[in-house]
Length: 235
Image 1 (cartoon, rainbow, N blue to C red):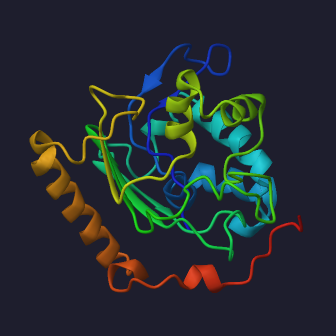
Image 2 (image 1 turned 30 degrees about the vertical axis):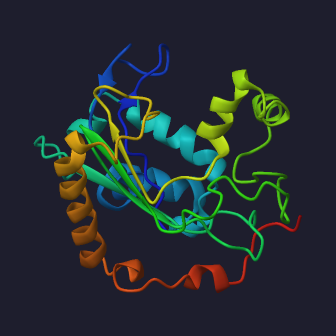
């Protein structure tokens, strides 16, 4: 399953030769590994051949190191400015945090204007079940933190209810966010009539991509990933 970062890359002060540079390119990290010779070489050195040897803790440092080089986004296969018009996201099972080891399957497409998400099982909890199931704790797809504890402890209070809804509540089958008006993707506009054309176009784009990549969910409503053995750490 791909893990992609469908957003702009920024450079923090002191971490690269170009201070304050902001790139609005849509970036897929796996494509960088596969297609960018220098990235692939550093990736192999960091963890051995192939993705399997990569230590995830080293990946952010490697990305930061390479992205802070002035020419990183200017060389490689897309050095002529042919950046992708959209990037795609896939999600199945991330951790054992739902009863029965269930997943939270979703697909999404991100353009510069919109983020469109399709949730295949909107009856499930996206952040994990409210009761702990094997790992992490309640809503276990969200790691523990003081802010999580605070929101969960006060979820029924008016001042905190909206934060609980945003972070932990169930999601509708379709989500659409207008990134120009709502860059933090807070307001779902999928049901608004003025966005009907955008939703239809993005839905079709996602369908074509799923079919073209032979995504099993393009032709089947099954959940085979839920039945695969889980090899994560024991709770």
